[in-house]
Image (cartoon, rainbow, N blue to C red; front, top):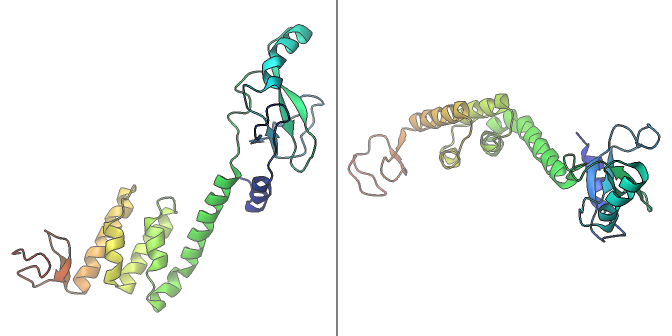
Length: 218
């Protein structure tokens, strides 16, 4: 995976095809340069994937006439360069499966850093009575399972009713975490002599016979 620093560098680079004026796509470099069999010297290249680009459209006829096999050309340029070149491609699908989205990778890296920070804050959050790190991990569907399970245990230790709405309003994709989170909520309610009204879901006293919020008999 590309590092966040390199993603930022590539995201800031904007290159355009001189033939169709379209913005070049950032793609993973092939393992070898077809011209000399060596590497490209870069993990990505910027390439024009516009099928209506004159370079690509006219290249088919030229390669057929010159080399007797199907193929065409696409304009490309290496990161940090000012001048590009054309490269031969065997089909219109070439490079379309290896497009790199630097912005998306940076977002993934940010989410990972946020998860890491929340994990680091879990132990101190018990002493500080801070439910936010645990809530973040429990509701992050991409976070590691072990960290989310630990977050449920931390919420129980903090014993704050304020966590309940966050969990009840979250749509879980992992059944095991959903069950553990709901069990944690039930234990917190029990520890505070509270329950949820079966009609309006507001929190009320365990011994209540009538809901103070919706007036329903319990």
